[in-house]
Image (cartoon, rainbow, N blue to C red):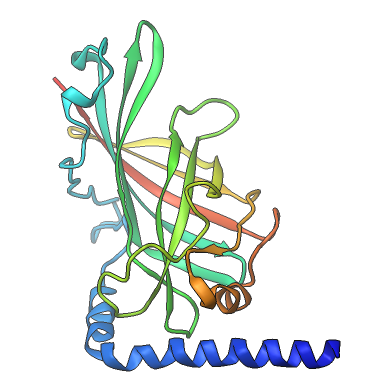
Amino acid sequence: MRDARQSKSRSADARRWVVLRRRIGSVVAGALMVVVAGAAGPAQARDAEGAERVPEFDFGACPARAELPADADPGTWRCEAMEATGHLKVGGVDEPIDRPIRITFAEGRVDGAFRQVFGDMTAEPIRVGGSPLTLTPQYGGYSDFESDDVRRGELDLTFAVGLRGVPGGGHACAVGSDRDAVHLVLQDTDPTRVISEEPLVVAFGAEDRRFAVPCTSGCGPLGRVLDHRLDLPSPVGDNRISLDAVVGIRPYE
């Protein structure tokens, strides 16, 4: 009886996966657009002489002055716009992050204490092997970018599950959720160095190899199929993210 139930469950999972794959047929044109868009290079491109090229940072997502803490002096605060490429391994996914993750936030001090205000995070879909699936990193609701001797910073992520080439796609189906996010504690792999003084731009490397990854959420009846395909949940020690980051820094005054 147990073998019969397992066989029936595997058959049901297979049918759901076939349904998921059939949805790709109507979005071939969208998939081609994604392939073309994938020509973007890494955040830390180099010029012909081998020097690091300074990106043109978008500070449009900086928190407005009105969003800073009530007692903050804008003259002592700054906005940081980060671009990072690297590599991601979560569960059965082991892929390069070859298009920049972009994070913007403000930081400063109020009465001598470090404070920060999160601005925005954007990222492009990361293809899952040769499948039509993609994972898109998205902000999980918590960040702490104050560096110290123990860590570079902390960041919660979820990963929206999508189909390659499908515009929009929604973020309801994701690896993790705001209540059960992937919690990163990033460690330095390459110390901070200044690559431009005017405008001020710094670069560094960081990684985390000690985080767990939960199952998918919000995926309905396909959740079990996706968890099996992505090899989730994945325990501490089986996952890794490495980032090469460049950060543009702009004062508020």
